[in-house]
Every structure is written in structure tokens, then in C-alpha cells.
Length: 153
Length: 153
DNA sequence: CGGATGTCAGTCGGACTGATATAA
DNA sequence: CTTATATCAGTCTGACTGACATCC
Image 1 (tube, chains in turn orange, green, blue, cyan):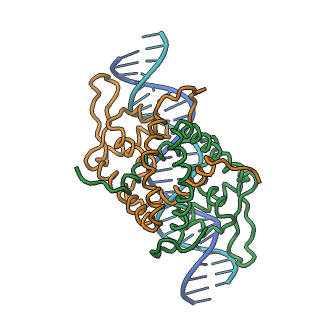
Image 2 (cartoon, rainbow over the protein chains, first blue to last red):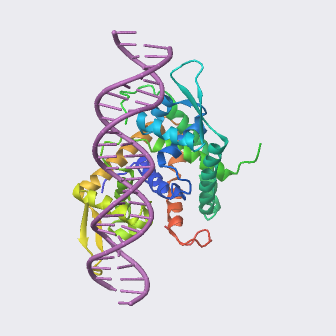
């Protein structure tokens, strides 16, 4: 039996936890990718399509189609970029923001049911981890000093 | 400005964290659903198709197709269920286990790069959360009574 | 027979590659 | 002219619904 590092055990636990966390009723007729676009726009604010190409896991033509559908559904708005005639700025409409917050609320609700059943000490430890998670998200956005390549996908 | 509960803040942080955590190179020509099937089989061991229908987010016919492809690719094996002539038992092949552990290793690697950059105290707190996450996964699998604690582990 | 388990058939949305228009 | 931004065209995988075979 080989040694398992702490980070490996943490990764395993997060993978399993996400199996629970991610499952929420679909309800909206939106694909995984479209929901991800809405979430990104909610987090990062107005973006250009080429910005989304970097964060989303799909190629430009698929993103064009996804955004076109979101616009038809009234969840995303496009305005011309004043500084660059080629590009449009994408942002959420009020209806788009509602979709994001409705799904967020469903996750809060599901997680709360579970957290409420934890022993109080565990509950406190879990809730106290928020700032560390936020710090990790910040670190991931930073340039990362000693990177060896940037290939992705 | 309205009040934000601790669970709401935690949910938000996990959502954002997952944006970082989930992004790993695709490499294998496998769909999201197929990867989820492999992960479930890895976690739960041999299953019948109807068991997977409960855990996966797709309907039975789509699962039939997905499993057929995984079998063609040599990642999943089917054996007849001795107790039930209608059903097959599904399990991972060695190649299937390798796919799961390769992806796991990629996540471990990505997470380690970030965890290494945390202040030591934060790192300890994060790694110490593993048992709470595991407990939540257990709770989610239980029929939902409402007692905190119940068994050791 | 009625209820479960699994597959088949037809359709459709969403993703890919490769080529193309327009502006910087 | 070359590069960046975005879209168009054609193809293919993978999901759905509804019908069906098979076994408890």
C-alpha cells in the first residue's frame, strides 16, 4: 500500500464532494456551457467573446452559437465595444442575473441541509474555510511566477 | 445591502473554487458523462446500469450508449449478473482505472501548485477539512433523517 | 400478467474543424 | 500585409422521447 499525500486525499474528497454539490435540478433549458457562461459573466462582469474563449471550455464558434442563443432567450445583452469595432461587450440582463441567483440559491439550500446535520465543531471548521478558498481562487488568477508552458485545453 | 449567511458565502466560494478546480486538460476523447461514469464505477465498484441511472445525470438510453462506447474503448467490462438474467454487472478494466487515476493525478498536481503557495496556517486548515467533506458525502448518501452524528468512522 | 431492466429508432441541440468577412 | 475578432458551413457525437424485447 503506497503513501497518499495530504493534497491527494484532499483532491479525492473534493472530487467526491462535488458529486454531491453539483447535482441540482436543471429546470432551465440551458446547457452546461451556457450556464457556465452566465456564471462567468456574473462573476467577472462585462466581457468580450474572446475573453470567454479563455475561461470557457469550448471553441470560438461554439461560443458564438451559445451566446446567440442566450441573447435570443433574453439572458445576455450585447453592446458594441466603443474602443474596438470588431468586438462586442457581453453582459447579463436582469433575467440572466435571476437565472444565476436561482441556481445559486438551489445550491445554498442543498448544502445547508447537509451542513445543518454536521456536528457543530465540524460545521464551524467548514464555514471557516471560506477565506482560504477565496485565496486559492485569487492565486489561480495570478500570473504564476515559474510557469513552464501555457498550453491548455 | 442584504445579509449573507455563512452557508451562502461558503456556497459562493465553492462555486468559484470549482471554476479553478475543474479545469484540467481533456486529453482523452471522453465526454463529461463518460468520465462521470468512470468516476462512479471507481468509487462505488461494480454496478448495474440501473444503479448508474440514479447517480448519473442522463437517461437510460443515453447511458446504454455511453457504456457501449466505454466497452468498445476497453475501459469498462460487462459480466452477466448471476442473480438476475436481465442485468449486467459493469466494472472498470485496468485501462479504465488508469484513465481515472490519470485525471485524478492531474487535479492533484494542479491543486498542489496552489496549495503550496498558501501561508502554512491556511494550508493546514484546508488540508484538515478532508474529514468534514467525507462526512458530508456520507450524509448525502443517507436517507436524510435529522440527527447530527450517528456513527463513528 | 404486471413491473423492472435494458435496448432500438428517430430526432435534435450543441460541439468540432476549416474557411471566411471585417476591423486593428 | 498580418493579426485579432467573430461568424458561417458542414459534420458528428451524444442527449432526448417513445416504442419495444426480455426476464423477474
